[in-house]
Image 1 (spheres, one colour):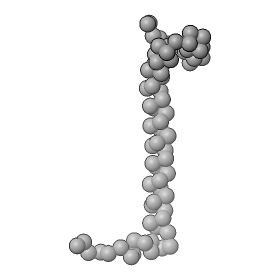
Image 2 (cartoon, rainbow, N blue to C red; image 1 turned 180 degrees about the horizontal axis):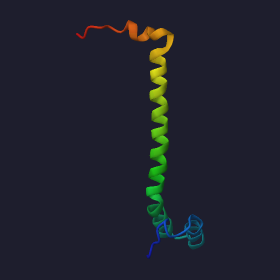
Image 3 (cartoon, rainbow, N blue to C red; image 1 turned 90 degrees about the vertical axis):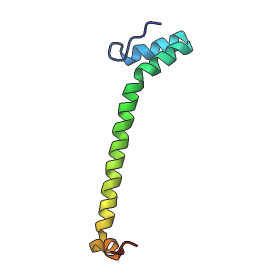
Length: 77
C-alpha cells in the first residue's frame, strides 16, 4: 500500500479513506502515519501537567510560612 503521511494528505482524506474502504489496513496505515503527531500532543499535555504539579508542590511547601519545611528533621540517619 502506498501511504501518504499526514504532512502530504489532509487528515479528512485519511479518515475518509478509512471509512470508505472499511479495510483494517487503511486504519493501520493512518494510525501509523498519525502516531508521531499523537505522541507530540500527548508529550505536550503531560509536560504541562507535570509543570503544574511541580508548581503546586512548591506552593504547598512554601505555605504557612514554610511550616512543613521547618518540621523536617535536619539530621540524616
